[in-house]
Amino acid sequence: YQRYVTDETINDPTADNNYYYPVYSFTTDGMAAERNNKEMLVTELDDINIVPNPYYGLGDYDANQLENNVRIVNLPQTCTIKIFNISGQLIRSFSKSSDESYQQWDLKNEHNIPIASGIYIIYVDVPGVGSKTLKWMGQIRPTDLNTF
Figure: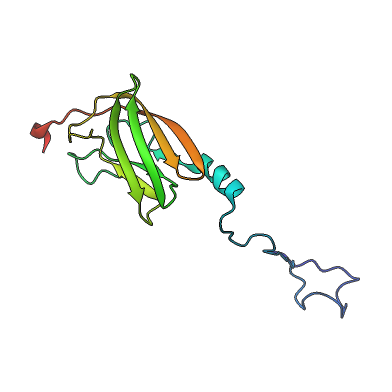
């Protein structure tokens, strides 16, 4: 920051500071956390997302070459997540009831079988608030045990 000194302000005893640097002020009025504000909760549904999207066979949540993981993020403490293929078949469901703000999905169905590459629909239901529908595309890499 540069000083702002002019001939008129050099000896001004009413200056906000003695160094003539910029002075800023702000307020946090109206920014306090609120409880049970349904309008706010409904707008927070827009923040729910799945990452990475699209998934191209490798993501930041994969611990090694044999894992495929994505996360559904910005979730409330309690919600139900259902994942469908584009034919409408239920692939996987989660009942989340934890303080974590995400749900990790290992890209497997209810029978622990890896899913196929394609487009999926994720339906998130938040009791007493509403629901959010997401579209996700994943390109799953084939497992190649010869590259280790």
